Length: 389
Image (cartoon, rainbow, N blue to C red; front, side, top):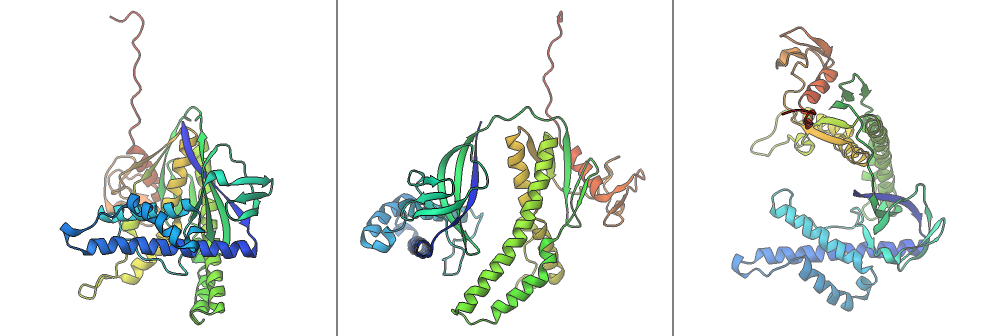
């Protein structure tokens, strides 16, 4: 079985290399905006007179544009094609009404990934890598890459540069581990499983809220376009990155433990994007309890439910396991012993007492057992006995 995995390593380009990378980022941002404007201009014309604008056509026009603009031709060709492809995928999602229309990018937005041809990336030693049009760059390789490289990209995060290797790995999953476990995700308890284990919600963003607020206020007091504003933006980005890394570290620990100990992990299918939608409403129809809903949204996003599910999925896949999603409706109100559904059974945040049979349990652990009961294990074929007619 072939699987794809990405490996990200920190690189330390020189001042001249950083200047060139910044120029590439600006050129790719310009290309995105130009291609997006072309698509909007085509949509603005009457339906019968709209020219066909797609990824292939824009890719052909990019060749002519690179010949006329040397500063755009300086960027790696693969990076320009990748920008046009990402724009095409974004518009496809907008047409399918799954996403909104792509917006124009401005200076200060997150830098686009700079795609490189993998054949133009060579190792110049154990701690240096040679990149196309950049030359030799110092790199910190903290883990081995066991597969075949099929893609290379340069990304920037909070002022630091990274190189991302996408690899295709020939994985041989071990025999699926016996046992299944249900996991209920929450806020007070980050997870509670059907075996009785609970992990308290760390609330990393809430614990760092005072620092984030202080850095944000310092940014708001700076003048637009000033060097102090650029420094304040960088401090804010690094503060948010620390919170994100703390959350990712805990999710990796939890998902690794479950992938090693269980063959099947059952979770609720949660629409996090819809659950965290703003309740502000409109001017004509304002929402209710807006502040309370905003606080709940922050707590849900701070818990990182989607990130935990993603890590569980790929780590179980590597080991031959499976992540199963089941309906989430009324799991916190259902008794795991008799199946009675009643909101009165959940007396408090942590206490569950069934009004039907009197079963008492921790509310989150009871919900995890209900989630596990909603999964039906596959039926194993029965072999015929010797001598059967």
